[in-house]
Image (cartoon, rainbow, N blue to C red; front, side, top):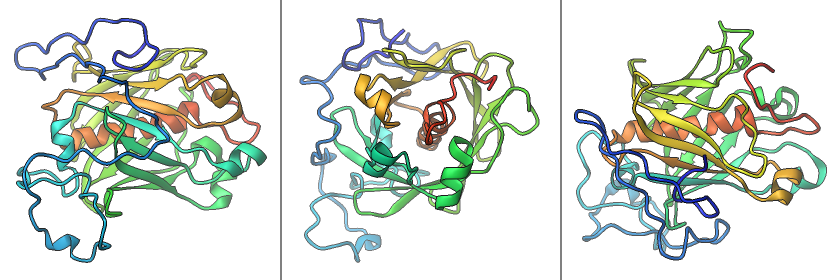
Length: 303
């Protein structure tokens, strides 16, 4: 089943409305004109109202017409700085940038991504921080720190992935990702749950309490179609969102490891958990869709 609301996907019914006591879900309409060109930089959609002066941005480059990803006059209580914009959206698109060195010589470089809203407007950028030896020797299992910055080049989220195993044959050392916002303050974790066939994850808060469940297909291979990881309630029964690896086209899929993802979540979901879901998307990308040199992509939890 392809993800709703993305170009090329067949007509699919929207996610069901949340049950009483759960998250409210609304259909995801496709904006007129589609989602725009992923490679085209577009101005950020500002929120209504005047921008409030923030002394944190006193040293920002002059003449920069882009607000802090984007800013707003009144900061919601309990929202980490820089994540205010996430409070009013229910989906994001993540596009991995093409690295010429990788495409030509299969030499692994630090992954870079652009995070956009449903209109294709860039709201954040992410870049892996790693050394050459780790990238090319440890491959897709490598540990990393990833910095996510807003349009004012301020780091708002940091992702920390330790070196762990991914196979179901090693249940004691499965994947984990820590999400910090702002950097130094942990807001949640993504933990791989052991299962003999399916890639399953727990989305946890700062106290490591399970908040949501994430489950992918037995064979995570996007052969001419999307790969969907379903986001469910804590008990795993009610669907509330989705992380989709989108088909990028034959040439890109064969000759590069650049990936496109879509993340859908309830509008009223805690903004910290929205940030943790972004981290889960990056972890899934490295686990199942990262290709290093001549090594094949991992498609199951068996390998």
